[in-house]
Image 1 (cartoon, rainbow, N blue to C red):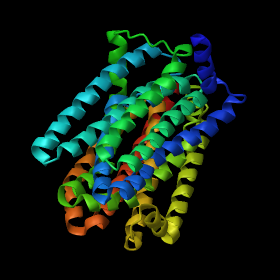
Image 2: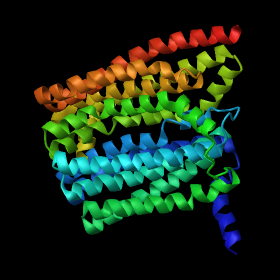
Image 3: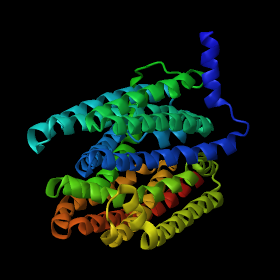
Length: 430
């Protein structure tokens, strides 16, 4: 009976009449849910617990997202494009266990730092640690996601991800409304996400993944070495994106932190809508490059650039017209004077989408290490100028420095990618 029930649950996530169509559909659902979860929670927290608590959640979510990248270590795109399976799933899984341990240790250290140095209350530190726990399960699920995508079963990856996110959001929303306690509700959210993971990805995995832990030093070293540029780059990119928020946390109030995040949330919509397109074509890009079909490879890249440009222009148009009224209604806050900041941030969102796509292409041609110079250089700019911009110009300074940093990074990456593609073609031709 137990075996029959288990098979039934597995079939919910694994059966698709048309895998290609299901992959596109569920990828859209999963990406939309991931994009919406922090925004929806911010709306509910603002209404149930006040703007100051919304600010606490915002900075906690930003930090936890950085820690999630420590756990994920930038491996998924590398894993999904490992079409020749140079490393098997057990290698990736073992590596993920190690990085997740490091992730949670780093999160605990930062919580202590927040309490001792930054003046965090016990409640604020507790919320931060709870959100980091949510991100822990996202990081563990990510290695399964990579495997499903690698074997052309993006539908399974997206279904299991959607289930976990939706369950967590529903439980968190109900808990916030009932308890009006941010700390308690956030830990309940973490428990729901853990349950969602166990009921989805962990149930499905045995059919497709060898989850044995094998400490094969050569494979672990290879994954660590090859993905280090991806990890460092993604980590620094997130730091670049969050630098204005950290500057607000250090120089302004929790209420202004919440206000900035209200207008910042649509930034991710552009990138995630772009993901709807390029997640399903990641393997196609890898096959085109591996098969030396350079015309097809170039056409896919140009098409994606046009998609990102179109989405960015659409986002700017929305920001100029109904953006602030809609956001103000959602967050029950007057944002009529924030139109300028919102428009500037929409441009930054387009640049973020470009950076993410260029990173994908660089990973496929195994030239990701060459992007490090851009990440490091722009991170230094963020460190030097974010605080000054926020102190002098407030939220407009935060918006402008964000967009300027991402624009510089896009320009550097475009140049580096062009050089790497040309070199890669010459190597393959030799």
